[in-house]
Amino acid sequence: MKRTQLFSKTSKTSPSGETAKNAQLLIRAGFVVKEMAGVYDYLPLGKRTLEKIVQVIREEMDAIGGNEISLTALQSPDAWQASGRWSDDVMDVWFKTKLANGTELGLAPTHEEPLTKLMKNFISSYKDLPVYPYQFQIKFRNELRSKSGLMRGREFWMKDLYSFSKNQAEHEAFYEKTAEAYHEVYERLGLGDITYKTFASGGSFSKYSHEFQTLSDVGEDIIYVHEGKKIAINEEVYTDEVLADLGVARDELVAKKAVEVGNIFTLGEKFSDALDLRYTDEHGQQQTVFMGSYGIGPSRLMGLIAEHFADEKGLVWPENIAPFKVYLVRIGGEAAIQKADEIYGMLSDAGIEVLYDDRDARPGEKFSDAELMGIPYTLTVSDRLLDGGEFELKRRAGGDAELLTPEALLDTLV
Image (cartoon, rainbow, N blue to C red; front, side, top):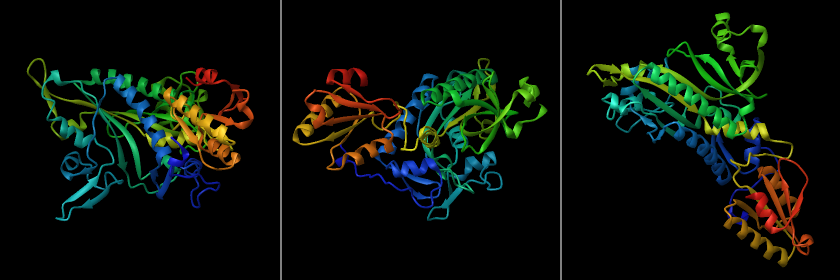
């Protein structure tokens, strides 16, 4: 893509009223626009990065047998009333509205109830199980305090997967497989070494659930980390009893701030009982489907990664989720323009994603934008280097600039 085709612009100053570092940087770099507290629009660069995070998650969910679907955001009350979660006294994050005829509707904060109801059309026999539908969708939650930029929103992207199993043993096997897939997601996003599977409250579903918590100075949670076992305990279940169950001593744990980046729940038969989701087993007996729920927030991850990898110059994206791999800067007259056009075509033909700064702008402005946007490589084509047939390549993450021939350039980037 050429910069002259990109309508979004960068800014030298942070937006007023925005205190979160990730949102400040993403707005300044032209990735998102803030509509209101906790609600952000994704511009072309932001959409590309979000979609790449989504793709990493999608690949790992597909690898463990997930079936991708897309459910409606508008929800009628019946399924939620059956489970007892339509009431604001039980679930206080609802956004609700009414149709012109007075019928009350809600904007889904999660999808256990509607998907359980939907699966009654497809599950009747043990041969239909297990099944693992999942989706990527904007969720709506009426958060009392929306802060931390993309990391706590009223409207946000969520991957939610739901498991439908024949029994608890089958569920637990998939539960552990999902935990491993989550670890792979965070590893691929550059957060693996600071992300912990964390014991948390299971609420009304089970004794424990598990969160995935990434260490961060901007985290809202306190977790107690056991470095040796690579596990952690959320402050909410930090009792002599979470400790006994895990077989760890209190003095081996270290308190740290963290951001929740995913969670997995054993739901058991709560929703399948409420909505009468059953199957006939091998002996002709009716059994209740055993369920689980597994969430990851792609937009929250985007905000956390923006915050975690930034430096004083701007964003520093991992290569696999950056909106483009190379920021191509041309400096000089007609010869440099012609050569830059040629290099742009060569890299694009090789499948390398390039943002080509073809604007009539000062070199300093172009380099500053490349750094602010966090593009992994800046490639400079200039009059000064043309005689030697080389081009300057510099990594955003640091290191000295290299002078490379076109052939060496392709070898390095491919």
